[in-house]
Length: 563
Image 1 (tube, rainbow, N blue to C red):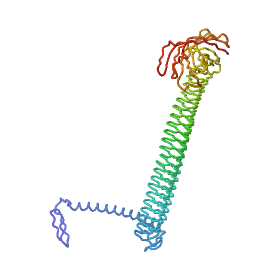
Image 2 (cartoon, rainbow, N blue to C red):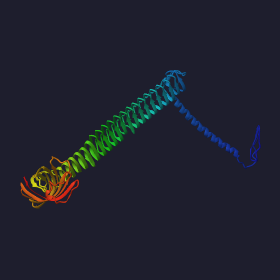
Image 3 (cartoon, rainbow, N blue to C red):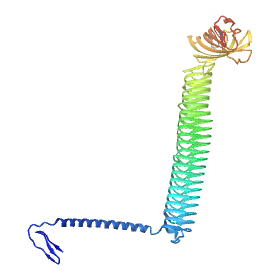
Image 4 (tube, helix red, strand yellow):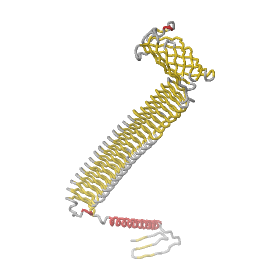
């Protein structure tokens, strides 16, 4: 081989070397410099690959040392309890793909195991674990565990666990746990837990828990908890429904419904309903319904209604409705029921008996009672100790007269006057009346007979206002009265009455004796007759002879007051 170089280069013949310096100008060949650079790069790459290889070898060695305890079996077919062509040492076997012809056993699973009868994995199982009758994992299950009868995992389940009769996890469950009869988790459930009879979680449920018989959570009940007979959450729950009972030890944030009892140990936000009783231990916002009772331990905002009693221990901003009784510490809208009681009331009370200790209230019922307040009372009996407002009823009772306007036939006060009066009215009846009232307002209840026809009797109820003209003795009285007429029977079934407006002058000679007289304007209404036997003195008054018969006339009234 012969190299022939240009001037200034090196000449080399095979077997000898001859180097002659021809010229002073020497330039290293470009090709030789490129080869040197490439050799340096190759060296660096080889060095790096060596380092990476050493790291990988060290890592593999460490991993191998950690798995030294296990015998890995990539693919295996077992006859009974791990007996296979590999041997019988199932307690230290890590299976990847295994088919158990009867019952399988292994230390660990990282892959797929299919068992004709069932399988037992002493430690963790990662992958798919299926047993015809049972599947048992002593550690954690990550993946899918299925069996026809029972699936059990001693620790957490991350994935799907299903048992034809029961699915049991000693730890937490994430995603899905389902059992034909029971699904049980010793820890929390994140996802879905379902069973035909009982679903039980020892910790919180973050998702849905449902059961045909009972759904029970030791912690939070999750987003939705449903039980055919009972749903029980140790702490908070979103929506909870139980056929017989729904119980949450904490707050309900959504809804709670049951046939008999819905109970929230804490607050309730949303709707709570039951056929028997709905109970919230703390504040409530929304709707609370109970077939017999609705009870709230704190404040309530919304509608509270029950067949018998609606009770709130704090203030109510809304409506309370009950067939028997409504009770609240405070109410700022309305109570409607048989008996309504509120320490402080701002709004309406409507029922048989209404009681408010104080406030601004409109009461309508048979008996209305306010200790101190403002407003209106409409009923058979109205009672107020002090305040400002109007009483309209058959009997009005007030302790302090200032600021109260009583309208009705009987008014009783602590210091008000009481008189018996005898008077003659414009239709020819003699009347005996009981007059009560205050210094300014008067009430009248009277009964009368027509001397010319004893079969006619009347009942008169009136109320009026008094103006002092001559100190306390001479007064001008404006009075309105309603007089029902009864002819030949105790009480006329058809409307038969006279409405009167009276302007009376009264003079009280002594505290025990006085007189009064004055004109009256009367409007007669009847569906019985034309009133000729009653209104003979007003025969020329304008009238309507149709059905009903009406007439208006001017009359006169005079009488005395005693006692």
